[in-house]
Image (cartoon, rainbow, N blue to C red; front, side):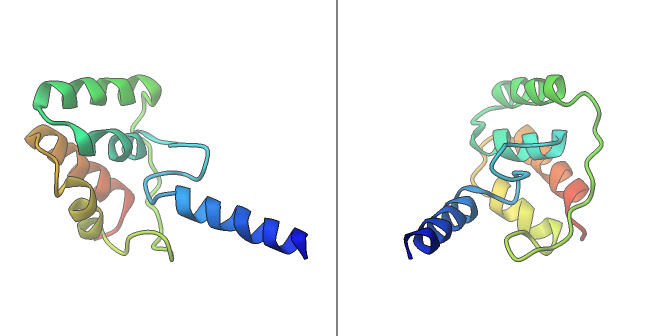
Length: 107
């Protein structure tokens, strides 16, 4: 019985800590996912540009496969944009979030 509880607890932890922007519990796997992970808390354009440079350094190519809608993901780029850009102070960051959402999720 303890094995079942352990398994359920592990599965809940994986579900709880993974976000649509993440490739799973191991972190981001593309430039667009990095943007969604880093940009939402950018308070000004200077910081947003530096965050974009960090993502570009980690992911020099902009090849992100479009994600299929899933139980835990978004059904459209609009949902992604609203979630990640709604409270972003930087216009530059909001624009980068929009581009990343459009690359990752269908309209």
